[in-house]
Length: 198
Image (cartoon, rainbow, N blue to C red; front, side, top):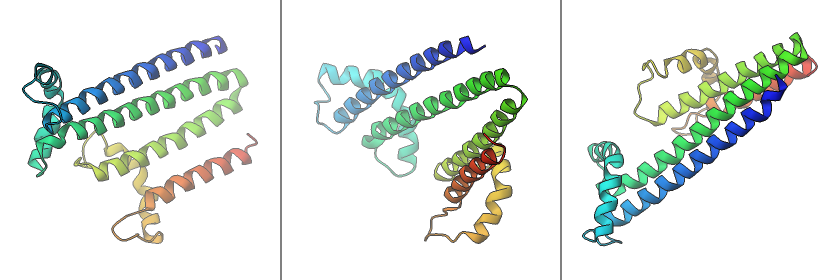
């Protein structure tokens, strides 16, 4: 089982490399599209037409949302760039989460029942932290908290976020309760693992 660890790490490094290269290529394409839309590059130049032909289909859904929200078409490639970077971070973070879970499970199975228990506790805390991050992201984006994709995160986090909201004061219009909950989860996980001797 432990012999599989280098294979998992090699696959993870390959996926990270592919994601980083893809995000860099998208970043270049979106920046070039922005330069064409902003007239830094002549829009009638053959290169500019090629850029628009290749990149505009990727930017079109974002452009429609931005225009509906009152933004300009020129800013659509920049928002697409932000989305590509964010998606890359989510993919790499998700990969790390899964890889750590798999490696932890392999190590736990080889170290006995106590090791498996510790890994399950760590995965539980990781899942709670992931749910908090999703709740925060949904509050920033036009996504309904009742959507089947994110409802589970609200169901998991509300039992401990709701009482915390009564204790933690708001900073103007900002609710810092998820940040406090995230830090408390880290402290609780550390204390629990110290208590069981790991």
